[in-house]
Image (tube, rainbow, N blue to C red; front, side, top):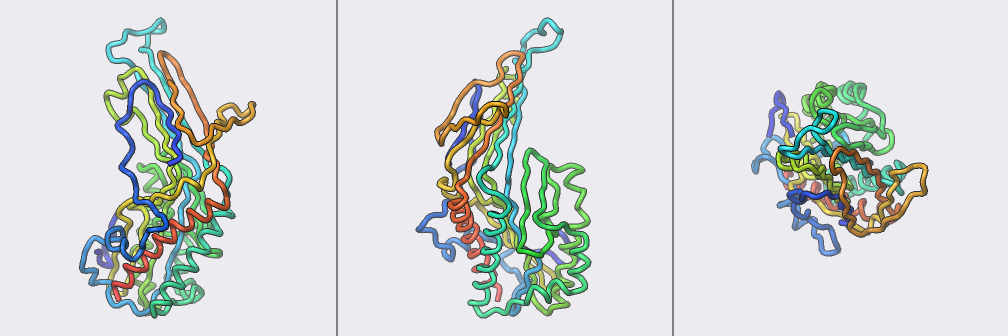
Length: 353
């Protein structure tokens, strides 16, 4: 947990491969299905850094300082390889192969994301109230002096972010800005520092909003990705194999670590974080389209595993794909997955009464 003056950091498959194999994707995530029991899984999957949580115990009134979901809309990865010991070519440079693969989300748009977030927020509030905890009205929260200062440095929603080989859009309930950690630029380095004062300001002002409202303040953030990618650049042997390899696994997932609820009392605060990724049913997607040549008609490649060699010798290959979602099933299945995470968050918050 952290004090007021501290800030803590907190498959449908498309396989695109060349001659050398990558180590393999991460272990399977926790699957959400008809047997998933949010109350039973919450103690395992939603945890804080301390079992004590003494600074935020005694929840009687709850104010939602922020509530947003970040939806990834595009992922890309590239690899470059030379063959170890290979002599220079006629131009005096070593033979090099390069592969670049991108995957964009298609079939759904910001209206679909907004519908998911509105329902998710409404259900969160309903569950908290059903447990006998008063929820401070959003108008009262947004009218506090501290919140107004924080919101002034936020961004209107939906807020598009890009960097680190990924593009995403952050969506909030209607009328609320994007603030805090959800403003963090992607990609690390200087980009990640560009909004540092904004999101750290959120951490420091949380206890102040709690004092103004005489309530516990929660900032809820969830992150959804639809594609997992690997590059042979991640290993030395991959970089000198002579074959540049990119693998893309389409896998709708709620991201562990980034999915969290920050909690603030007048005395300080803490966080409860998703410990393992949550796997969403593949039925949210209907297929994959190869849209590499925009001049040609898009080709549907279904849900099968594709395998082909890319980048042999002095060559460069760029491939572009779209993962096509069924909008009705996407809203239903992704919304359900996020709803289960939200229910687990509420369950753990209730343990702090």
